[in-house]
Amino acid sequence: MTIRVATAADTQYADLLCQWYIESAKQRGTGIAKRDPEYVKAKMLQGNAVIAFVEGELAGFCYIETFESGKFVANSGLVVNTELRKHGLGRAIKREVFRLSRTKYPDAKIFGITTSLAVMKINSDLGYKPVTFSELTTSEDFWKGCKSCKNFGILMENERKMCLCTGMVFDDVTAPLPASETEAETPSSTSTLSE
Image (cartoon, rainbow, N blue to C red):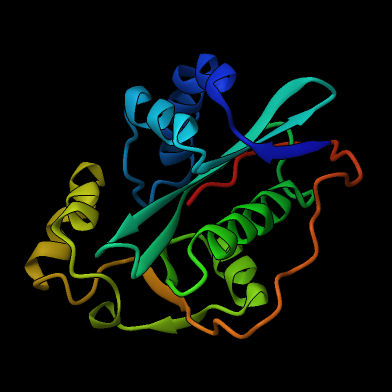
């Protein structure tokens, strides 16, 4: 398994990754924001994404978004090939994008919202804490990303104070970086993990 910062050469995978997001949303049935291939490509070109390969085949992806002039950083769009779920690949990708976030934005609060229990567990293991939505960014750019989620109506009915997602924040800037997992064992089974 190879997990690394995505580059311009990886933009060829943007359409496939966006298809994975759609498939994951259907599988989970709990709502997930859609991603546009051009947006995914931009994240790769900015050096704000992590991509994974197993035996030379695309295996997973996650990217960074910044808000309020870098005060808040979200690790978003974690997705894993359906054939590789439940073997630690999502955890390894999340760990690497977390390391990238901490390196590029050392003073930022790192946050995310998710309905995935697996992602909540990964975040918790990295030191994230569950928080109310009032402790997340107030950036309209972040919240407009929720518009394509089927639960957007619930979010807006609650004046962006709660939804089906759980908000989680990491804000311990003194904590050491977790060890890198760029060369780990190759996973070998099935499904999709997404945030």
